[in-house]
Amino acid sequence: MYNRETGNGQITVQTHIDDLKVSCRDMNEIAIVIEQLQNIYDEITVHEGDEHDYLGMIMTHDRENNSVRINMEKYIEGIIDVFLMDELDEPVKIVTTPATNNLFKVRTSGMKLSKTCAGIFHATVAKLLFVAKQARPDILLAVSFLTTRVKEPDVDDWKKLIRTLGYLRGTMELCLTIVCESIHKLTWY
Image 1 (tube, rainbow, N blue to C red):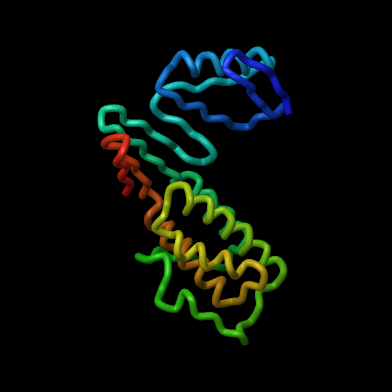
Image 2: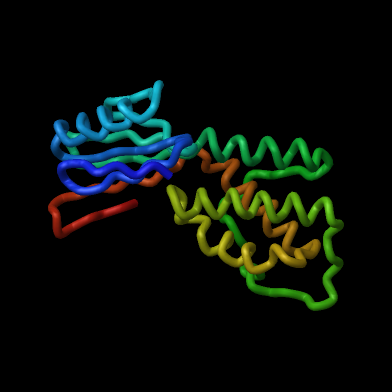
């Protein structure tokens, strides 16, 4: 960590930064932060404007409508591609819902996944949790349940994961839109 006293207090910056998003109404304040980072690090890349690719999220700011659109289509596509590379014999068919009525049903006698498949299951569920929390709340219920199954997933859990991936495959273009009508009213859909 790097600590430095500034006129307004203290800034703490890690010595290695992958991605950092700075937002403020006052562009002068952003310029100050950028200048401070440039004084600390030899080289930084700054992206400005109304569209940003940040941690797999394409965030598009619409100043006219006071909204931000968060799209994770490419990130989701990558999750599905990696899953299919790891499990070539497993078809991921497009479905209209991320889960069925038996989502919460767990059979105690269900056949456990192999160590390799359990690893794929865990990694995929972790990626989907990130997607659900950032831009796709429509899959959050299914993914939240799947997170409870990562220690000892069985064949039924695998099928539920494939169903969620199938839903995402058919709805990749869906995104989260956040609208701020006033400081007291935030709407998302």
